[in-house]
Length: 364
Image 1 (cartoon, one colour):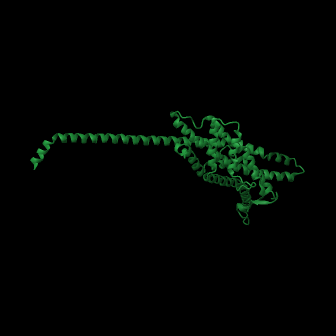
Image 2: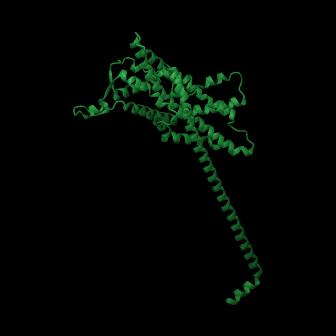
Image 3: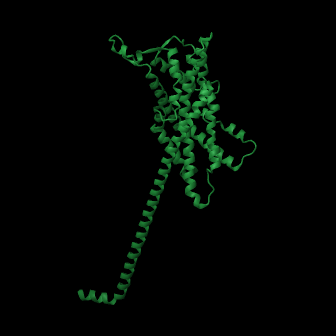
């Protein structure tokens, strides 16, 4: 048996040598192929990791820019509101003890509440709108930097960025004026200056004003809150009626993409969250002035609770009037910090950036 096997091997020795060489070469080539594929996978994963890390770094840098831009624009917003709703001139008149003092106090009541409530609305809108605009721009800039080696023209050149970001002037101009008209503190018109209000009463009146504004009771065609933040598409096109350049077309594309974001359910959720936090902080600031006095706190028969402390409306007006300096403060106050640190705002900003920093997302 063994001799037969040995004879068989001798007769087919050359075939076995060739088969062994072929098998060995195949194994070698397969090994090399596997090594190359493994290296390619490693390089691809490393490139994806680096790209993701670069995108994350760019995103975080962009968010810091958003925060600084909000803070830098708050003085302009504050001065614009004060200019539109000038309570200081009424205060000066009251110091001279005029004959129509009661009439001036009534005007001061409406202006003081209106400008503080408008300040809450416009600050919240500014925070969310700039998050959208700067993350759209940030996403396009990331793409432009990524594909610049291919010789493609940039999607957001500096001139287009400047044109696009200047649309924020609508919020500081026509949008602000319209929001002032919408607020106008209608629910406080009939409240007497001598009437005492608790913090709960104040919260109730503010809720009535918010309902009036946010449910769009402004005539037969209710306006959403986003209307105060950007001009409608027809207005934008009318301003470009003389002829659209390539840069104008790129700007209008960015504006339309922003409008799409403003109409999304996510935007409405984020803005409502900001407004809830903003008005809550406003009432917290007011609560500091509704605390029981030390004498009342020591008296056993006096309820030691904010809800039981009442102040005449005439004393509340100056407190409300001064809140704008806390709300629209460029020095990071609790009010602004609360808005900037809301988790939903961060997540929304990340989603906007993600959508505009991936080519396949833009194609959708």
